[in-house]
Length: 299
Image (cartoon, rainbow, N blue to C red; front, side):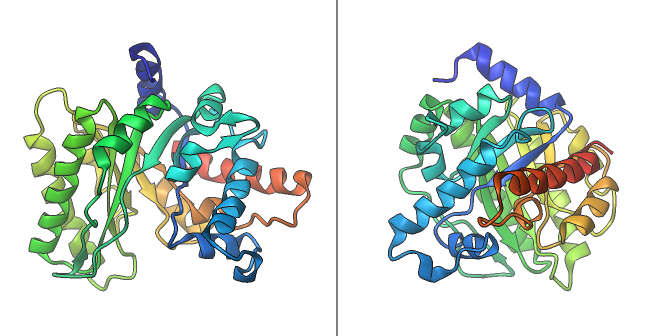
């Protein structure tokens, strides 16, 4: 169980730490793609259990690497099976915090089909039980993702309303929610999406009860600095950015234009890693990626 003292230490790390949050939360649907990027083809496993064992081995190699520490990585978002697993003989959340890295948990169960220009989250069955279990394992916060594909005011409003309703449920369990309404960088109305989302987020943040705080995980905006008001909002602990399909180099350039926003990258962090690498090669490649993303986050 995360006691009050530890929770406050974690909160301080996330709120003021000079670093970024690693996204290690690929779930069932995205795991084959993540493994392919790691050099493991689909024929390497015969069922889901073998597939998840392979992705857990990859994540264990990452979180036990000497460069994966709280010096530059202030948090890590985990898939449920990773939270329940072990690395270096310890429960993963415990190992992360011993390294100074605050553990988060992905709680969404994927996306509904697109409607009104957006993809809402699927219903999260058993969320209360999952949140209690996560807190008992030392998890600090959660993450949940929706997707915005076009500038539909009604659709974006529905996404924000859904996200904040679940966020309040998460706060009731003593955890910090990361709200992630991703704007697709492929959207032809990306700038308009950003503007509508900004207005809806401000309204939702202003409506939070006193003392309730959240984190925001947003796509890098088409207009640099657009989210400055969110960074400064008293109900926002931290604004983090997803890479959203940008290469690491391009994502870091865009991130550095947005003062106060830090990275929460997945593919842009892991793209150069391969399971055939020696430990020396693997650690060197990961260290280079961490250094690049850290530099953009503190720029």
